[in-house]
Length: 292
Image (cartoon, rainbow, N blue to C red; front, side):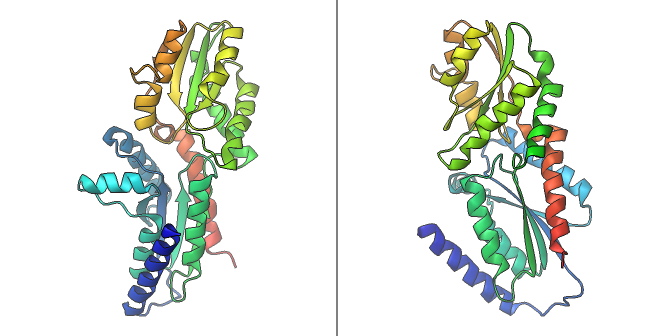
């Protein structure tokens, strides 16, 4: 209820701001792109976002790009450090007040879970504000369609397959969720299995967990494991929960069972072919802005 009331207040403020702006010529659209991610407060991890922005700028050199974080916790933490990042509602309100007419919003989430659903509600609400943005369209998360899963699994095999072998395996750490969209993680494991039976995916807050991967590693006689984040950025989860030295980190748990473990702290958004999937989704959203 609190978040809904906040959205209503922001929308009302947006309408007020828009009523104070000069009338615009609807025959001359003013395009904008809003990139939306969960967010991170880790400076090194934020470099992945700049990589995404550079790729988007190459694809749409004439279009202004804005950012928004869906995580209240991350935004508040950054604000306490002197950095202000808008929520999706705040960003769209500002863009409407500044005269943007057509905005493509691109989700940089991994799966269409709760964060994406909330973003979709926000986009829908702003699209229906009187005298607001003329057109708003939303690009889907990384793993949405069958084709997305195929592209990602083939990329992973091409990029990391050489790290696997008879006694070597790759284990990805995904975030996971209690939302029903968590099914995307075990589904993606199927796609990975079609490419390489030595690549596994576990999650921190969903299914499968690391404990679900243990029996397969033992059965297959694995001795060496490479750990990687199955996340947009190598943020707090990757640094601490995956590669940390605490006894409950994935690295420590695996080492306690006798495995040789090598973590790689590199988010998926740092890889060209992964960002290309998001950009293709954005291109679809941009095309939909002008469909009759």
